[in-house]
Image 1: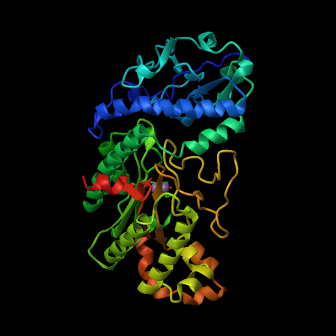
Image 2: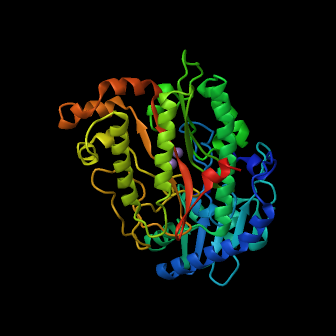
Image 3: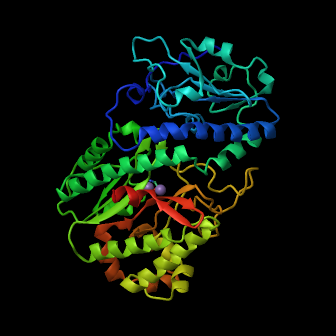
Length: 465
Ligand code: GLY
Ligand code: MN
Ligand code: MN
């Protein structure tokens, strides 16, 4: 098959050349931590290659995806396995080649192009760890690949076989399961990047709260957020959730209304930021007035912190999710939204109607990072507990994993209506429901690093700086 013309739409040259500097990280400590990160990557890949019975890993950054019947591409999203080697998030058609015993090779594709700005020459703290080969034509990649393609495994998405250069073993499960399982445990370098992503995200959250207090529309709040974090929309780790009033009850609310509501009562913001490819994923909820809803947010914040205080190595995350249902049940009874014992409110499906998502997920290069259901590095999976299909993390926690803790409480009429005709329905206080409905709901989400006997709260540390 002929090599596809790569085209440059989707390149985000700004990510590799000029970008507004936001002081959120100690560059020297990042540089000092990076060699150990590469050592860890090498040992993980050596074990994966051994298990796959292969001699070389070829990790592809990816190709931009063209829009149907158009000559533009979707925004480029790099293969996370490529980004875990080095902080290049916007350079398609690049390859990392790892052969145990040799320094990793980076084939850096710098297209000769006058329509778009080609990627700048590689520079920065990470370059010393790589044997960098710059190529200006895709055909030249082949010269730098191991000659014996039979001994290679290819890690990445292949939409055009030409980009695999004759490597047949694409994403073999033997190797991939191991790489995905291990990616949940972060290196010192990755943790520093994730702290920086949290600090950057918190800058946006503070700007967004200010815009909310000034009575701005969802769209304006969104723009203020992007400006404060220094991200164009495509650089955000996920689409911002900027929800005023009852929109806060839509879990992944995807619009940003230009209209200002007549009365603004509440604001839920779920928005993150990136640093060197690593994401933060932060949610806060605010009341406009110092009223009963504000008191409920404070109560819910305490509940969230109680859950955070349970996090430690060895904990079964599914148990923590179930503990959250117990706490939500007690809260519903305490504030009179539903009356009954915790067991009754859980068994009758009431807590699931008010809190219909999982307590959290692994976080890293991907916002919902891979491997949340993996029981080990061979591909065995652990299903969520029955009745909790949306729980994305079912593993036993290990030190240096990073994950979210994000309990929620919403008025979602579709789910309440589903209970009609069941014994639980009568336990719901409709008057109280009518009171809460215009506020939408509450979610509070922190990013935490698991420690042997507790956790580091990246989000609260960033807010408290
Ligand atoms: N921002 C999506 C989530 O919290 O999982
Ligand atoms: Mn999340
Ligand atoms: Mn979130």
